[in-house]
Image (cartoon, rainbow, N blue to C red; front, side, top):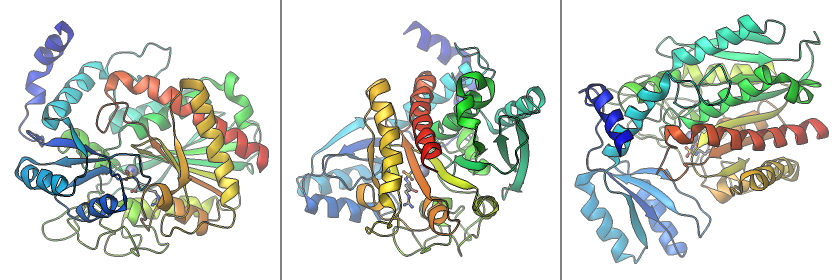
Length: 419
Ligand code: 0X9
Ligand code: ZN
């Protein structure tokens, strides 16, 4: 209580700044469909852009979670009640959660984490701080770290990769390609990528086996315009920031890849959160990631893209419920990740194809990496919300990224042993 007061007092003025979307009175509903009729109703509701579905799993027994603004709540609840669809309000005022997260994050941003790391995992870092960390690593470990700018966001921010090697000078090794932050609001994902970077570079002695026959190429923030916008304006922004129509901004970058583009689970409406874009690869950010993938074709054996939330390890296809011929190879890698996390922390991850365990959505980076860039193991990892509705509280970041690393390490070991 005292702590909360101090934080509130210290950051009252930043938190109440007028430019932030307040989310005052917005509620988060946890909804547990019990049959296919319930599931169909939820799928229909998810088509309506006024409801923000944080997650909508297909597997019975797993809950959907939806953010609903005050004006829509009565009708929304009536609809659920009429269908006898069990629900629970898990957050009565999302505005308070967002404000508190912002205050805590500002407070802790400049504090060091409990570990000896050179970047703090006590707060979600801004784009500039992430860049400074990359620069610092390049300076301190010039023989093992190489930075590149692979393109620019619509807003002109550099899309920067870090290539991590063991410094043995072999430039033709196999590659693990990792990215995060394609969806702006999923803050735990770039944090997870930064932890991987820290482990591979600063904790090299312990992890050198992961760099013996493989290099790692990591793009920690795919969508920096969106990421920054979630810090400065609208916490739940998901898309890129290029204007999409006269009145709406942004494309869902994970619907913008040119593989069965727009066929399913993607919207043609520029105002929708799952807008597929005016054309495939309409966004500079997806173009840059596409080019990066192709530049690594042949060398890259594992593409891993970090998202949140929901504890999933997903693999192709995202556009159809059919499975690729080699699905068992990918499943084996994903299962190794889930098992390592389960035995390390007890956290459960659900493993399966995107369409079968989550929903069908075409134009994702994972399908493209697998089918068009020829990367044989392609996985989307949805990190946990850690009991906070959508995003782990800043105090949970460190625990979460450590857990995530257990899974990523196990998957990398499996890939490196198989390929
Ligand atoms: O919908 C998405 O883009 C991902 N889920 S999220 O909640 N982070 O937005 C899942 C993507 C799975 N892959 C494909 N559908 N291709
Ligand atoms: Zn996502």
